[in-house]
Image (cartoon, rainbow, N blue to C red; front, side, top):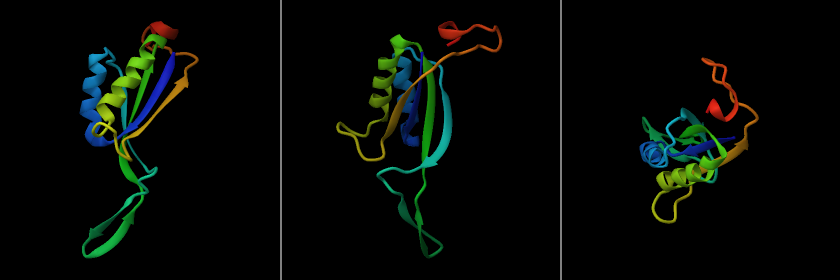
Length: 115
């Protein structure tokens, strides 16, 4: 079992969800987050004053999958989250973490059956 954490552009959320549906991944958690990487923020004008915004709005997805779904899930996130053919700085990151256990609260099922 793996926990896949993806940080993507908010505008790409619907495309990523559609790509995940194509590979039969239907369960995910979505969170609004802020951060920056190579983009390093940007400058905005507010009421005539210029100020620097260094934390950019992103969306974080958390998806728990069994081993056979890891690569299809990663490819679906890349397909839906990439800007254009080559992608652009700020498209996001995917982290794949080992997951020791998963427990369904309702039934007490554990492991891959709980996912």
